[in-house]
Image (cartoon, rainbow, N blue to C red; front, side, top):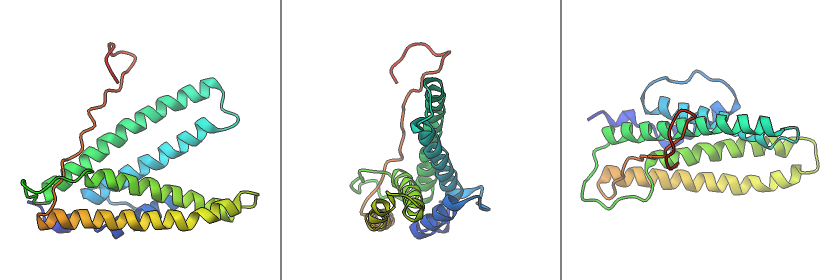
Length: 187
């Protein structure tokens, strides 16, 4: 079993997500943190592509192209969530008879990533000139509380797994993304 040092603290991950949301950083390329930062980068790119699809100037052709990009990014997101859970499952010694958690740690890290991105863009919008700035500023305490509670919940889950009180099943999306060359099958 790998050392528990291979599992970064939730606070370390959220801090890394925040730095990465502000711009390019020197991120580790390996280990759990490297996988989590790859997931976060993928989520930032997907956020940007979703914004492009909602743009006032986006015509049907643009939206269709962006939708294909989003599908590819979402498929990559699922791969990364699975890889994070596999790395955590290989690192953490789980009690097989412990009650299972409803979400895997990687699924919660994914939610944290999206919440950090949402908070980043809301903070930017709250200081920009414009009529909606007060609306965005009013959202900040809610988003910060959601982030703090989600961090607390993930820390508790990881502590419960380490103590043998809970276990998690590594996430497997098993989603089928149809390509143009694939036959008809459910998606």
